[in-house]
View 1 (spheres, rainbow, N blue to C red):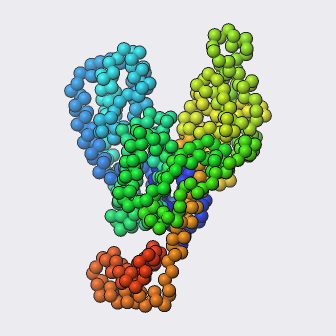
View 2 (cartoon, rainbow, N blue to C red):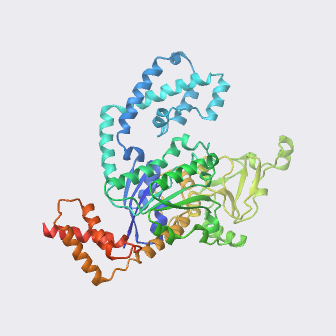
Length: 531
């Protein structure tokens, strides 16, 4: 007995690895991811089908033509405005283009939600630019550049490729569909725009795929497994989560959810609070799963947490082997001020990392560039996607030969990936990409913990299918006789009529999940023999 698992927004495969590690009966069927660097890392570690690309376009390839029509219309509109007569700082325009031209730009433009970021608005204000005028000028430039990607020569092959991927993603019946849908729209670290941010709307791709799987005859996945930031629950006064919950319940799912902190439920010493939503199509599965409240906290001592840090972080790294990781006076003089330099500086806070970071197997941060703080829980603070960009809030540790930031290997291991033994980095991928991937990833051990509970529920329900062999054979033969003359009917109709005969003879509360699947196979065999 096995259960197929499909994964949307797979990233580098944290959720997939958790299910794979939980039990071999979870069979990874496909994964979808659009970030090219993440796909490289994923492909290095998994052999099953990775369907690369924008899931919205894979599920609806005709979006391409709607985007082209919009861009052509918008280009004409903007061309008729006097914005092109204005003159702007060349470097500022380049910064705007680099910051705003992301994979979701056209979708954002189509929804009328295009805007400059707060930081770009501040820069525009310093130049004395009119905000609306500069926004229209940037939009014109972006539309012009993106139109180049929508010529017939480029569009038609893309459309055909998306149609093939649409077939691949719906090729098999899926027992568990997982989705760590983008969290930036709800995260405290982001701007928290929710569904007004296109990334927040990507949740609806989960709904769309469930419906399409049902339409092609595979039925809905037995379980939906969703993960996001804890702020999803409280975003927009709880209304965002109400919408998500309502959409899932309208599909027929029963929801179980809770915010779990990584270090409280696993041996991974990281403070990482995430909401996990497990949606069950069958009430029997939901009841067998129970509640998240029954998952016990580990309640480890600070010394035990310290020991975990010692075991997970790589203290064999040195200045000689990895100088790029180390904080030195030459690189960051503001973080190594002497007392004399501090008194002359006129600053309110004195930072000297040699003085402030003084314990091994502890994790520190320079907060807002003003003071150093040791994590009070004795664990690593939440890893983030922008750790590789430097700045404040980067986790720092004391080593045998200085102060350094966490390495990509440290970060992945704090997420439970076990780099070097179970998981490997691809060749020629820069450090900033790896930091981003680890910060966007899930804690694998938490996924494994929940996946095991899902499997336990599946097995409990499926093992309750106790059909007496003799009685079952008689019922089976009767059912075959009743349907074999109706060969022109669809398979589903045959199956339903067969099950109806069985249901009349068996107790109403008997679970028929496994028996139904086996009956489907046997009926098709008998029908093929008859033909």
